[in-house]
Amino acid sequence: MRPRRAAGALAAALGLLSAAACTGSTGAGSAGAGAPGNAVPVKGGTLHVLSTIDLEHLDPARAYVTSTQDVGRLIYRTLTTFAPAPGQAGGRIVPDLATDTGRPSDGARTWTFTLRDGVRFEDGRPVTSKDVKYGVERTFAAELPEGPPYARLWLTGGDTYKGPYQDKAGLASIETPDERTVVFHLNRPVADFGSAVSLPMFAPVPQDKDTGVGYDNRPFSSGPYRIDAFEPKKRLTLVRNPSWDPATDTIRKGLPDKVVIDLDLDPAVVDQRLIAGQGEDANAVAMEPIGPASVGRVLGDPRLKQRLVTGESINTRFLGINTGHKPLDDVRVRQAIAYALDKDALRTTRGGPVAGDLATTLLPPTLPGAAPEDPYPSQDGKGDPARAKALLAEAGHASGLELTLDTPATAGGKAQGEAVQASLARAGITVRINEISSSAFYSTIGSPAREHDLLIDGWTPDWPGASTYLPILFDGRLITAEGNNNRSQYDSPEVDARLDEIAASGDPATAQAAYGELAKRIMRDAPVVPFLWDRAAVLVGPNVAGAYGHTAFVGRLDLVSLGLRG
Image (cartoon, rainbow, N blue to C red; front, top):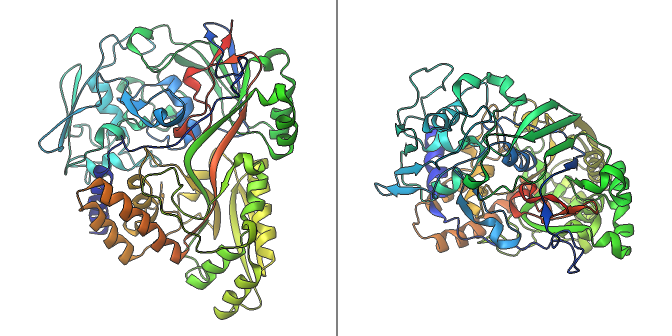
């Protein structure tokens, strides 16, 4: 009963708000003629992407991390997608594989999409509605648990369907009356379904190319590039998909002949290479923002600063607290952690003020409905150890306590872990750092049985709006054994009931304001400690053009528009 109730609450909440209600701003380089956002890219050459992390999942059924989704747009298409644009325009949902953003009927319980003519897979066969249907059906398979929950929650019969590996008959609520038409029958009205189908889980997958969990290493291309070689933790090489027709694609420019993504690199080495900008690095971009040690040098050199692309986001980074573990089930202990955390130190590990603003709320100010507050204040965001100690003593832990923190096994993850460790130590809390491979980090912390006490975490809404933020992260009825997004294990009947009420309100403006107030209520329980509203400052090589930060990818570069100068 609890999962079924949760499905109704989340589905209604997500269906309530329109994707048009988006915000945010993005700048690309400086205003000079040589800025990377102003130069005109040309066709040809090899674009290099230097990444300090691995790619968690390439399989569209499992891709639910912004970096993978950014890369995935080069390989496969979805029914709709985010506009390829900086600033607020990048938050718009636009047609992609489909000819429009969907045609609702039956009170938004039925959605019909028509596929563009001429779209082909890498082997030349046309993409059909059956490929889209099969791609969505795969997301129900127990073997592929990490993706978004929307199909399971919304599609009629989704609560019992087990996926195509167990149920060969398929899901009857996805109809394919002809090769170019796909019809989704929902179990309730969902006004935002046209936005939800922008997620990778709605990419087409030909059944005869599906290799189950092995598809993660070689998804079949419907976009401008196909996978030539993939060595996890080392390199992903993309080459042109000869069957891609740019006349069918208004999103992807497909300019470079080849895209080479080097993985798991040392952050300092990435910065050094891009600062020098020599050889093939002149044609390179960073996947992640510049490191803190490089900020001063880049901002102090006009030539380097001109190659720095800054993008805003709708992401909040936070320290997650596992409320299911003792003594973290005591709200006073969680509040003590909220007071003790040195947010400024955490921001410093990410580059200082260039990385964003210190967060005091769950919802970033750029998100509709966000309401200002600072429930656990401290001078300059550096923490209040004295207040934290008093709360710990009140909770019976005057002598301190020991906790384990999960972080990605990257230089940045380690630095953030050490910042948490140092700041909580001032309040008498000893923190042990547990490093997890970046390629398995979210899969690991998404399993309650494997998650520890604390974790470095964050959230970007699936499309602009609190309806894809609070219900997913804090509805206690959505806690799952695998692929869990409520990683704080937060379970408040009061909050769950309020989520249901907001979902039933029927008015988007009223709902946005209500979500902002509910975020304040959740913060009184301190299941997470927000520390940063993201901004990404990414360095690009001197021969790169078409660069801008995209709000959907935490302000990082939108790879589909990049090219090289003529």
